[in-house]
Every structure is written in C-alpha cells, then in structure tokens.
Image 1: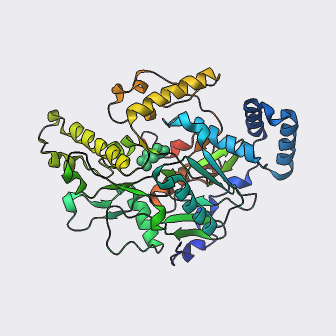
Image 2: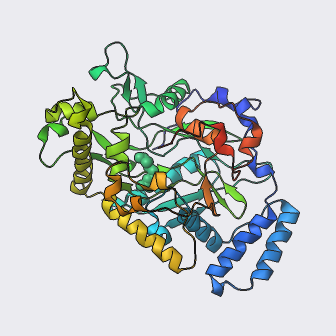
Image 3: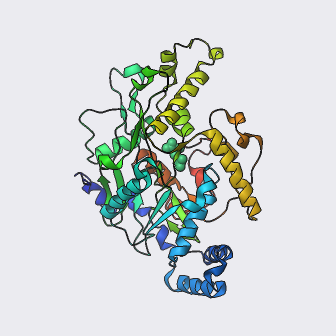
Length: 427
Ligand code: ARG
C-alpha cells in the first residue's frame, strides 16, 4: 500500500513561495488555439460531425468559463498527436497505439499516486511494455491542477557517498537526483536502512489543498532488470540494474490551449538511453572506467579507445539483459529505421514531421544509423508536451525554484527554456 510519511506539514503553509507559482489554470484558454485543435481533430476524423458547430460551442464555453472540456475522443487524439509532434522522440512510429487513460476526474494527491501505481502496472504488463498516458485533472479556475514533482515515476536516489567513497565516486546512486533525494529526505522520506545505488525514490504529488505529499511506490509495481552480459560473467557482479518502464511525469500536455500539467506517459526503452547515458555519462553512474577495468583495457591513453570499447560492451549487456528478462527494449539500429519509416508515412499523409537531429541521432554509433545522414523539419507543432522551468527544476532538485510566476503561467511559451541553461542538453 501507499505510505504517507510524516513531516510534510510545513509545506502546507498557504503563503509558501511555491504556492504563488501554480496558476496556469487561472488564465483563460486561448480560443484561437482551441479552434486550431478542433479543426485538426475534425480534419483527421471526418466522421466526427460538423466542425463549425463544435468550434462555436467551444468558443462559447471559453467565453463563459475561461476554459472548455475536451470530449474523450479529442483528449485521446490530442495526447497521441502530442507524441507524434515530439521532435526529440525517435520512437514515434507507434504513436497511434498510445493507451490513453482519461482520469480528468482524479485530483487528490492520494488518488493521483494510486493511479500512477496502476499506470506502472498497466504499462509494465509483465514485461511486454505498453505505451500509456494517464491524464489527471487539468484543474479549473481557482483550483490548480495536481502536479507530480518527479521527473519520472521511477528514478533512483543519489546520496553523498561520505568519507570513503567506493571507487572514488562522490555519489552513491544517481547523481542527477542528489538534490531531489535530499529534498525528500528533508520532507520525511525514510530511505532504506541499507542504502544502495538503486533505491527507488518516493513520488511527490502536489495539490493546492494538500501541498506536496510523499508516497512510496509498492515494490511489486516497479519492474526492474538486473544487468548481465552474454560472455562476461564479472559484469553481473557489478550489481547493476535498471527499471523497465520510463514514465515521464513532469511534462505538461497542452491540447488546444488547455494545459494538463499532470499527465505521465511512457514508451519502452531504447538500449542506448541506459547503456550510453544513464549508466555511462560522467555525471550519472559513470561506469565506463569500471567496465574498462573488467575488460583489462589500457586506460592510459585515449587513443586506445577504451571508452568506446567499454561503451559497446555495456550496451550489449543492457540489450541482452532486457531480452533475457522478457522486458521490451529496442536497439538504436532498428529504431532508427523505424523512425525513418515514420517520417515517410507522415509525409505521405501530407504532414510535416518535426525532429531535432541532436536528440534523434543515438549517442553511440551515430553515423552507422540512417537517421544521422539527413536533416529534418524543425517547426514546432501543437498539441505538444512542454516542460516549464519550474517543473524542470523540481524534477531534479525537488525544492523551491526561484522563477517568476509568469513562467509558470505560460506552459506553451516559446522562450521558457531560456531560463534554464539553453546550452545544456537534458536527459
Ligand atoms: N532517457 C530517459 C531515461 O533514460 C527516458 C526518456 C523516454 N524514453 C523512452 N524510451 N520513452 O530514463
């Protein structure tokens, strides 16, 4: 069951600065953006009836209430097209298959947390991962939407390693979440008695009434894969593991001008995300020196390409381990081909397919994949997933962020990224 640790009460003070920055729901929805979406929906669903009638209704509803309700069909289409428009995602061939959970009626912290757990079970599906999005209450004027602070539903804690760090690393666990980890510890999270490099962080769900509240994920909702290697038995002894399902939980889904700040979504992993980034980046688990040591490589000179050789074996280990555990995963060669099929299909359907080369090209063997050898449309299309600076900050650091309230009020604003280091790539 979900536990609710003590110690969160101090965060319920109504005048806490965090509270001031949660008012996206108070701004009226842009009626032109709403109309643009309704027209797109009808263009792709000729059977949906009279578009002028629906546009008139939506405009009237916005005039009277400041916002409007999507139909279930509009909501599902909006979520799928937001995925289709995600310029950084190489896995978009499957955008139509997204399972959309319409949970707009859910708004209390404990119900949000419970439904996140259900999301994990549905998406995990015993290893045969299903792409799922759960859309929680968009809020209403005077009642802000719930927000999930975590960057993903499942992420591992990062602790200061203390006096005698093993292998010289200053962090036990994932250094990316050191700030988030100390923030949840300060809010009463009880880390496991014996801390490990792979302790699952608690969920932090914030609502206007309850403030941020912590919830422990039940162990059996967190599907994980131990990392082994087809030929190198010592690699298993490093005790590495990774979670099966990446569920991004701090991006705002914007459909036809309506922001849905709590709308966690997942696909399945491409191996390089884990093997070439999470486990390999120097500012993450930084494992290449240990893998190179195991392989007996000469690390004295860069020219031996010891990093590259260790990287390939680590990536083989990830792909092999997920397959051995019966958990869906894809490799970067296959997925690159699939992505170009998707671009081609989109063009044949008369649509542009926005893509960001620097995110689409995989972090290993770029030029071995066909996505490397061309450019892409770079226009930004709606509906879309956006990450505002406050959520981006909280996803990593947990605590309050010093941003202007205007930043929070503009989930679709084009310049929001300027407030965080625009030259630094996120995960
Ligand atoms: N790169 C992120 C991670 O390593 C996950 C991003 C989403 N990835 C996906 N395959 N849907 O956890």
